[in-house]
Length: 290
Image (cartoon, rainbow, N blue to C red; front, top):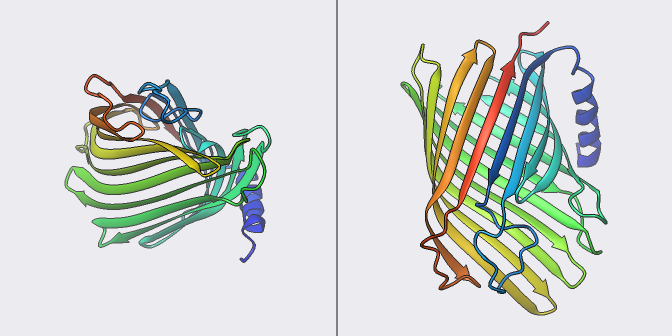
């Protein structure tokens, strides 16, 4: 289909029809931390690191239409991408899984309360042991007037299933570009990490460990003058999951920096005593189809 907005409306309408018929899973997650720059940070003005505590959240509902067809509806609040409502049509056929659907940025800037976009994912299983996947998300908007913004995300993962564990290597890039009264603002984050999710049959607990490099950048352009603060961090993440009952699972996680260094406007800044963190708590409820 050539018109992505039309495709978005079709998928969104499908998402809400079956919500009361065959909800198979509901999940919610809350995160609090200071790993990312605040969105209103002014670069190169001796702003501290960290510059504030940010709250992130996500809630997803999955509706199973058939064994190979699902509709996922969710809301996300991300430190970079802001508030987003999403709906995805998910199709699974053998080793291939594809999703596509609309995104709606919600109340991220006053002059542009709603911004439509599109998102999609692709995942391929190889010999039931190895999998590769990717995700793309983009706001369909131009940057002309004050308050206009465009956000996007690209991610890729390569994973392997081994006895009692799953290991992954991932790369993720998120950005938010906004037209301001005096110029433009660009906020971005890139993550490069490896992780291992360890479990054992019959044991209701899982442990996931990740070691990643995070690069955050905030850039303000006024006329021909560009001011940039950039921060790199080595981050260790630990998440513990528990199966509370056959249909209910919970998890809690902590990400903390092992080492951070500044670049651009933060070059030379002493960050030896800086503590950056992010804590998360999640709950997932799974039900059988009626």
